[in-house]
Image 1 (spheres, rainbow, N blue to C red):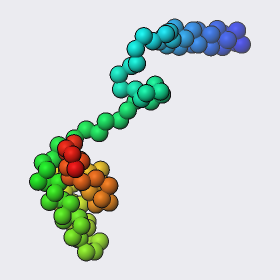
Image 2: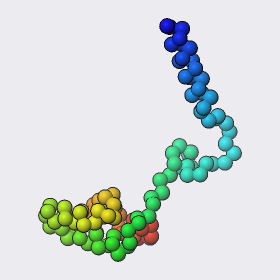
Image 3: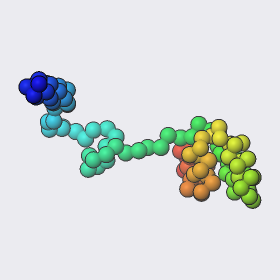
Image 4: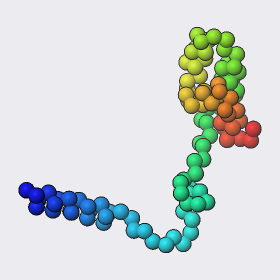
Length: 103
């Protein structure tokens, strides 16, 4: 039984070694990598919601006076995306920034 286990482990290791991309010199910097080549750059995708909707959602969020009003605003604007609603509410992004425009 020990021999069979060792053989299976060897075959398993050989499969993963063979299926791994070969490391070699790169002639150019890969797309989407930072200047040091360590991790891909995250470019935020522009919000699908219209700029008018984002501005209206931000206005409603900032005008909410209590938790019940805030919950109602979150429910009203959930179609623009939870992350977008939170970024607007916490004032981490402007509607223009979420749309990918200067702002």
